[in-house]
Image 1 (cartoon, rainbow, N blue to C red):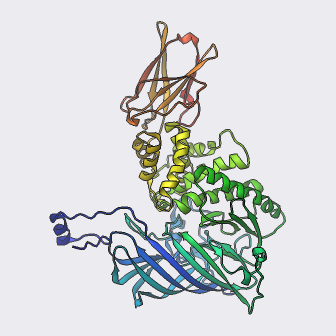
Image 2: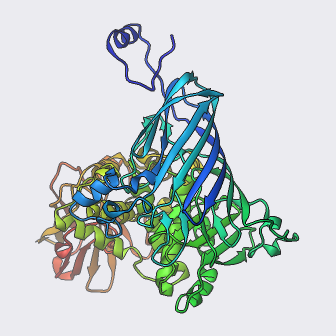
Length: 613
């Protein structure tokens, strides 16, 4: 019996399947999508025409009788879902606001499919906003491939969100989300989400892209340039002679292996600088020279290689031989092997946005969780890595994660917090999404170090990379890696911190003398349980760390500070709202008692965390 899992079971068929004892077994798999595209851009009309050959490999156990493409540029039209959402949400992105609703016909974006066939047979398709729904003439069976051939055309919208033309800084083309892109299908089914304004989820594949454009333009982005001898413009030093162009246009040919998206940018004013790293990675910087910013871009060439080295050491070796930092877009946005960032910044801001977007190459580019479902696993982990990298290569900080904790505390106090498990497009406010994804997501990692020890957490991050690179991990996958690395049970941490908005609040409730000893009673005020590090400092200058693991951890973290003796306490059951420990000295000998002196515990009220006697 062949079971089609791409559509829900219905009626008698469902009864027959269940009665016969046949149940679908869906494991983890990765689809593959190899693109070959030829595009011709008209820089006068801002319109382009292209062809696409897509080899789609169905590595799933399911039979697929339809597929979906993303048509992202259709979001930039009055009345689109992105436009409606921006005009109705209480705190719209200032870059969008009501701008889409006011676009003129020559300013809108669109992406239209003119023809589409599968294995040589025309298919039926329907354009629904930013999604193309395709009914297949024959199913794509498990472990088989299909060849899709397409012609399409598009118009580049005025720069509003991420992609577009003629940005505020004068960049002509920021070409991201510009082509019909096959939607991802995984163990949870299709992910044909309309483009509302959030993040992306794609299929890995090899991209072979030819872009024909006015010969005065300089291009950069995803992929390795295949024909430098035909291009020039900063590529003369590739070791080959430059062929003089014939006619008004040039064709740039790029190849990008094993990526899940393809971005390019173009401007006739770009300056192109290169830095060759000792490990063979080439770093490209493309920007528009301008008084007040050129000097900062020159200095940026020092920091980009340093950031790549730091990230590779701490989170896994960067897998490509190239990275490009390109002026464009509307702020900062990550793409495979590249990023678009605005360039008119002071040096600190320029380095910061570069490091952040570069760090996405690990969490969005290679680990590539579904950002719609787990934005905190990309934005939060990226923010965490950015803070550490900036402290290491640019401006040392004793507490690089302080900003993340502060952002999380502000979100809690605002009363607008939603669980981090909320779909990225469905948060009630942009502020709740941003703070949860970026700040609370970073706190998730920092606080994990408090639970299992920083050393286990750091080793776990490398293990995570080596285990789940190019495999789309989810929250469970990450937690299992950390459980294996630490030997502790951590499902409770994920369930509380990701799936609820319950907060952490511990306090020192009472200190009383008990003969020659002292009883210290701690209380859990918040709803989320945590292990406790309790530092007791004595008046004679000595100190000791009393460690209270949670019972549900089924173990304890290693001692972190050898200079301070650690005293083990009985595990604290999460059902108990208070816990009393006894120290072998009178209260008169105690100078202070403090919960979590490391400040890694995201305790929302730290006023009651320290008591001076």
